[in-house]
Length: 60
Image (cartoon, one colour):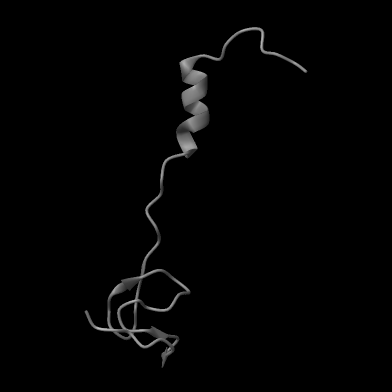
């Protein structure tokens, strides 16, 4: 098994980790209640998906 001869520098390590940051999720607007929701999912606020109510939402 190969072993590294020299250690990798901090710059090289950090360049590799440049893409590891958390990304902001893409949000869309619910056409029924105008709240933000994840695309291609049932709206957690009103329970509608593609113009139909598919989930009964409980009020808190």
